[in-house]
Image (tube, rainbow, N blue to C red; front, side):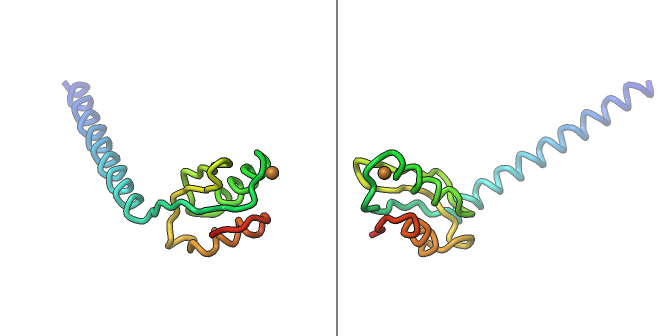
Amino acid sequence: MILSRIWIRHYHDASAVFNGNRDQIAANAVKKENYMQKIVLKVDGMSCEHCVKAVTDAVTGISGTADVKVDLKGGTASFSFDPEKTPLENIKAAITEEGFAVA
Ligand SMILES: [Cu+2]
């Protein structure tokens, strides 16, 4: 009898933890979506895959950026960023420092 009571108690504890985590994950997802801005920048001067990597690494290396995609043919860099962590001007500056012009 004691064993069965312990089992039930553990079961309830486990489901409470599970529900708590799920609510937390949902709350974090909403918060993240609210703060992330998606943008496409025109980047001039990219001529090969090394340029693409340089721009990709520059943006990826900045705190608060995500989903970085650099397109050589289109001459664009698209990404999401958290303006509260890093202003857009700082991200543009990082690309400029790599030797590319950002519109
Ligand atoms: Cu290149």
